[in-house]
Length: 485
Image (cartoon, rainbow, N blue to C red; front, side, top):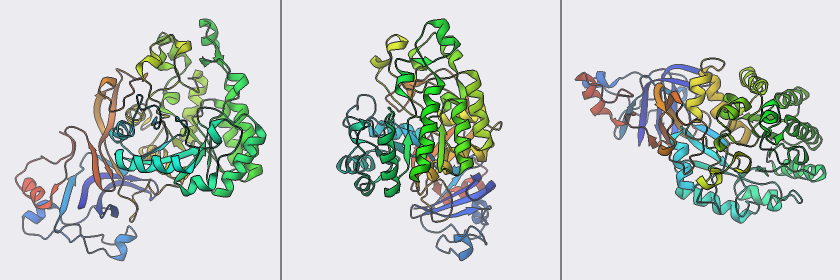
């Protein structure tokens, strides 16, 4: 199928695109992204010939020239007026609970949640049961995800055998099986000597190391951020220094090993200062932050009555830390936004705060939260797309994150004005553990395409129709395909 997405606002920081334009897809790949093409359907109805999709000149391949002629047999047209047309969003940090905990999430439900949130690809963490620490498990999960998930699922393999932090996993075999990175996410690699071997081995295999930065002795027993709020409530706390000292260690070790280091779910101001130092020094380090750490702090935990849905690791930190994270996403220090989507069964959260499981879901709320609270200030739309598409692709070496001709046709259609209320009972995910229930948001994904195929369409969202049908509708003055009703 050939698809012509026309009339939207193309936003693709990888090409410097931000303005009215058209996108043409053929054979599951993007063949044109640029200024509006000639031959609108209404003109075709009046006797003009819609251009032919097979006629792709050199200019089209480079994103310039007169562009391709998209019409012809099998052409579908999607009217994107009023919508943003952006590279498919990528979440570099999710927990899909397969294998071993499918009562919390499955590949099908997690994939559906991702598609509903505008994500065309996710990277799943290895803290499963059993862990993803050998090539057979990695290959099995990749194949199973390809068959069951609506979106692309990339596998992050374990950094150490059994996630025990004692012996590096076999990185060359893991990469050959399809792993895109290694991590012991959910727990730190506490021993510096082991971490050196992990970094050296991953560097030799060409894999980035994704670190869960938490010094275990400093954070032991902590249920929330160690600060005035925790002290007043008598809650055990985990200090920001528990994160920072591990980031400082790993930056120095990554420099020594020549390894790529990615800091997962940064939560503290001092962590961002350390990352800035590392980048200035030339260390190949990247860092992600989550929507919940950008929008909430420890004061909100108390205001919510210490509800277990406000418990995550790292914890929501101080107001000052939150403000520092916002500065870091605006000034370019932060490379990606990740959800750390961590679904739990209700019984894991139906208990007192100190005893509850860590983690919140985020695939279906992340985009709306950021559009509502951070766009256009402190983030421009282009910067948002950089953080949610191009940045994650660059960190993990993935083929998406761009609308360049030749790239996979992974596309997210966003209605920036669509208002909606977060209703966990309507989530596609099995997890309902969100602190954002009841929030009214502005902006959400209304269509998600993977390989040119629509895998999610919000009710009332845009529908591809045959080109001739679109022309007839426009000539009759109807608006049946004009974006959101």
